[in-house]
Length: 202
Image 1: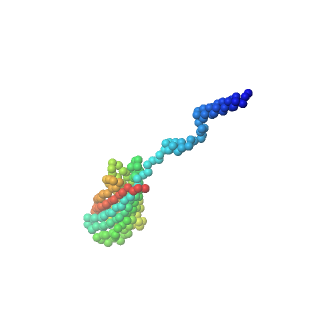
Image 2: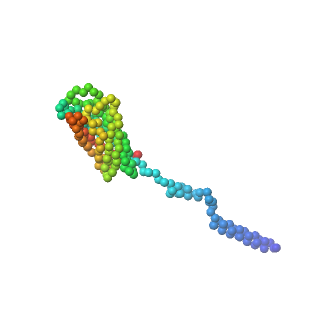
Image 3: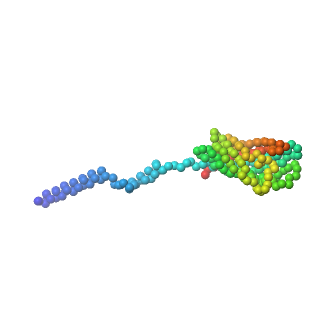
């Protein structure tokens, strides 16, 4: 075989091999099963990972109360209170849950002598629901300090109490007034409380 013929034969062989390699490369997957493609893992997890439930809304607030126990015969005992409230609102159900506290502001004022110890702090539990543009709260007493004390001015006498506050611009504000006859039927309890609540960013 002449030299020119051998060169032509080798050239034809190289071209054939190159063609076969190109065909295989075009019709095969460079990433076999079990090997992730670059960038595919992040996209797949982003599209398939389940999103958790929305975080609850956080609300805080303060209140001031003026309360008294008016006896039909014998005079009146008056107290003033300041307090705070902290609660969460479930973003899906609107359920409310939280705590608060009321602190005696000033001293018990009575038209007659009181030898017993007056309460100075009242612990509160908050439940309820956010619905139809309003906060429907239920405040109940969970503790009192000093533990042996009583409230003679009427604040705890109206607990538990239900309050409905209109909500606008992530805030709620209103004054709530309640009255009821006392346990002995010899007087009335009066309860006037102004509340200011607002949603806070977490």
